[in-house]
Image (cartoon, rainbow over all chains, first blue to last red; front, side):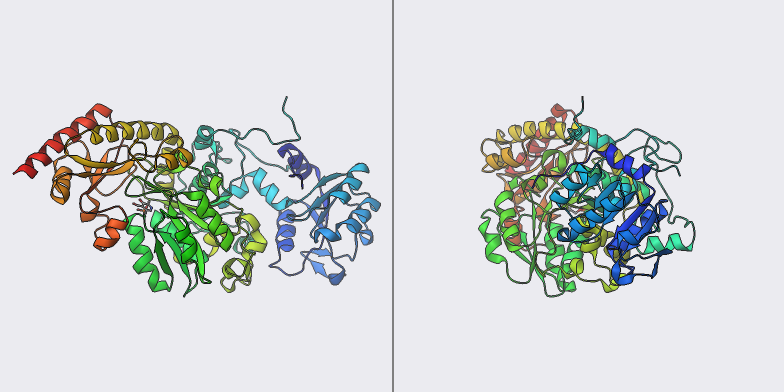
Length: 163
Length: 438
Ligand SMILES: Cc1ncc(COP(=O)(O)O)c(C=O)c1O
């Protein structure tokens, strides 16, 4: 498989301009990775709406859990997929239906065909990345844990969101 | 114009040595990394505190587990090794303990090269045994020796690429293959080479250890250690590493590898090993080492240049029986040096005097400029007789296996004017010869 590459400016722009994210596969269990990501993104000012048929109607981190993307009663800008790669295509179809602009597949999640379909429809697709880790990397917060962000800068502020 | 479809050329080593991890301080604009001499960091509210303790958000809690000066250094060294993440420790020895703490269980073992710093041999043999961690030593001259020693309880292979005390280089690539086939990580102590001279991750190492006390700090003024992970080892490929792949009872059932992926090993090292064992690097020491690293490339170039001149001088001296420096034509490690240390085989090496133990001890007692002490990787040239000092706790057999036999003298060639280093050795060798003739 071809290595994936996304320039920092593209990731930074998505994380700066997006406000509403639907998280497909959000877990209600506090020690699952999706819970970590949802909580972090909320702290950074994103509205994150959880999607998980097994937890439909429950309240997760202050948000109602929906069974599917189509059940969400408000517009969604980005769909963040926390599901195995083979379960991506139907999620992408629904994301197209609800008019999302960005599809983001989590670390280890990748489906090139579904991505091509979404891109052909004019969407932006990011695969095999975590928005929490990318936010932490580009804002410099990841370096607080001794992680190599690969960001070299002589500028003072690495702030991503101003709102 | 820059092409956005592929990564830009990564910055060079010198740029990373100066800038990686060291962006301006966001709140004050301070251009140099400040010394954050603070034990704790305020929480915004109870919820923020909970997120931090649960590792759900990034941030500082308490300096035992993280500090802004220390993390700048961790990121810098991780970048220099082209690794994913680093966890700094109070000393190099603590780094070895921290790495092994993550991998080992009582009754487990690891395989180590015999050619190690004497203190590491002692740590592995006696102190680790008290934790129920067993070390099996093998001669690294034949890579297959590592394979032969592996059993179902083996968790790692450990070696020094450019071994202390001197001149021995281990053929890394075949050992990395053996580790990969066994599904265990290869840990390389890269202290004596520094990341400027050797890049063990390029040859298949999975974890790199440094005593930053040595060349990284480089000025003999701060102790420190670090564990760097490549981020490429698959901890879930077998069931050998439950502390990374199973829910951790010491962390409310969190599974580190699944949650933190390619920096799961380091996160475990910080959130559990640093937290519970406590060998934290002091911010002041991190600051001194950060400052030292900015000139690492320049210093290493001169260290190597001076070492080559000293080795050639010694080899031609009538009182000297042998010189073990991989930069010499006479060294059996010359080819390995070209492969793994293309910019030069460091500045730490050993030599033997024809007068044996007596001549060796009298040489180290006769130096005037060169310092007789136990350390290496300083701006100052350092000399020691390992059999009577650093390798003293070993048996005679272990000493010889480690390259620290009775006649061995170890030198760490520093950055003084080369003629002055050689002149001091010259007068000290005269003394040693006169003493031997008595
Ligand atoms: C190769 C090597 N590894 C590890 C260590 C231990 O480092 P520290 O003295 O910082 O604990 C040393 C110290 O001499 C060393 O030379």
